[in-house]
Length: 609
Ligand code: AMP
Image 1 (cartoon, protein in one colour):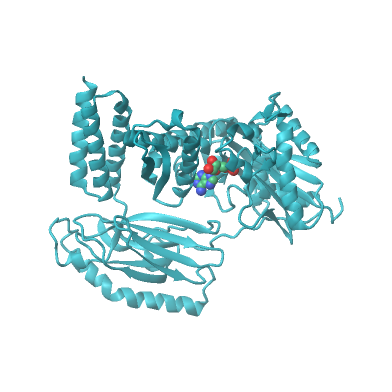
Image 2: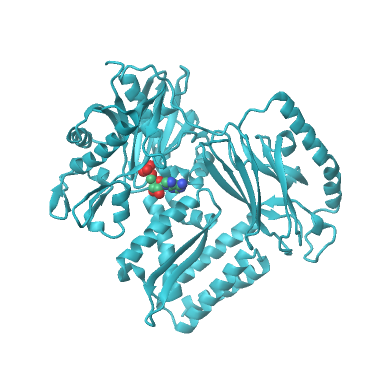
């Protein structure tokens, strides 16, 4: 093929689609500046105007019957879509999406695009592959190759050497889950086994949050939005997905939706609720666990053992959920890579192959990642002793940029009013062996007897600016610093300077802090003058976390009873829910146990009736 020919790579996804092509000497995902992902939605406005992508997705809320989503699931079937007075086949709907992507590519490349590599799941049948080719033809494209998605993902990761590797490609998208074991040797990637569940994905996570929101609204206002208002229901569904995405980087998120319904007295009814990552993870845990069954089945089908897996590649937007990575690391044991944007990875791999087929000598894709890990130090236990310079990164090396992540910490001493946040660059679990990149003090914390929760949020952008913010959860009191050039390699001189600054800063404090702990950690609830001066913070309290999780389960159980019980009992339950929530919000362990005990007793009484 000629060198000037443009071939694009297209990931025609269930939820979103992307296009990639060679720009300069590397494949890049193309599209408008703010978004490179085209929602795989097609619709017509009531005025008959064709809508593709974001516009169609927005219209889903108000005219679901005029909009098609998830057409990929129907490829290769005889199903027809009726929109207004027109009828479309699945390839015809997909062709609209392809056309829009080609438009994006042409605009950015300033060249005509007539050829494409299109990816499909490894399990797609001949009929489904044929339907995909047909979609390309309808869109005016010559489909030069149909490429398996796991192969595309492993091409994107292009390991840069000739070693043989067995990789697992774990792909969790919006509506589908696939896992494949691939064998990679130089340029040849072979899919050894593949398993899928095409009715499992991020949409299911959204539904669990949506149920939680609907129940909350019903408990508060006695209105079931499911049958009252399709528009409010759709708004909540949207809010649930947005909340889910925020919980991938935040520990808490607030869902506020105004005027969802009108009370009989004409007042507007709102929803205002805080969700924690912990509560969300408890909701989705069994779904994530169910993917592990497929994982082990696929490993077995490929004739391999978990120990044979050299690397796990995460693909699909839903693998941004931290629990997914944690569970894979824990249960499969192989290193997990996520350093290529999981939702762009397949398109990049397709773009890479497309570039090669067009005659270009390309070996790697290009993504911006953080070359270092960053995090704050905290008080922890080392060899049974309290140690003030424990360290765990919040932003890990090789995370794609930009990135924001939040972790929970607790004040270390009773009635502590000040925390000092020291930010380090490095991976050593001893902060003092990493590089100090900045520190700041937060004063004026609410003095509480135990465990005041402080959120530490770190954001790193493409320009290498690191923003670190500490926020007192109960009041929102916050302070931050900006560190410029955080990802620029430091010169030897700068490193030496950073190290000596660190030594100076800590040499005095080490002795002071150790002295404060001489009689073991202070746990007294009384204000103690020595510890109220403490400036340390500790990591999340696992015991408290377990109590909170149990309390949430109890609240869920009791919510399910609300519909069928006496008004007096209902009021008492809601009252206890509020007390428990307040105890969780203020980390008041005593009040939490009292509330949980009372609710347990009441449930025992009601369930026995
Ligand atoms: P895909 O089919 O690969 O485009 O993935 C789409 C799915 O990824 C949708 O369910 C999205 O809600 C989900 N998703 C996108 N971003 C995030 C995020 N930051 N955290 C969790 N899920 C996400």
